[in-house]
Image (cartoon, rainbow, N blue to C red):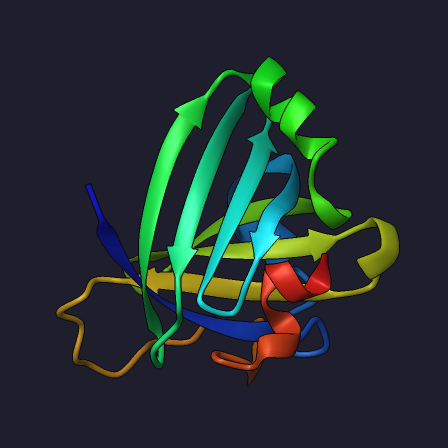
Length: 152
């Protein structure tokens, strides 16, 4: 069944909040690759800790897009990674609660080492002012350079 995700993304600004890791409730190491990276849709395989998913995302309209996500065996995901286009992304994802929402801070490794972004998934009916955490820097929502599929 389709789900629509609404997401906003920002560069991490450690200069404003160097202690953001102490705010985190946990973190996990991730690897992800793309079986397809078309502008109209992407097909991603992700291994996060001891779990794995296959995800299909539609075209982004503003801060919203259609998403289908399915849990798959880790062994299958590992094999699919070998079929991926481009490079495999490596990142550490940290979870921070702020303003009643869970923010995800991705600290990239590998060929994207040095890049860190934070994003939050909003309820579809969200209309209020977003309460930004102190580590949120420049907003890059909709900037294709920061799409994970482009980083791969």
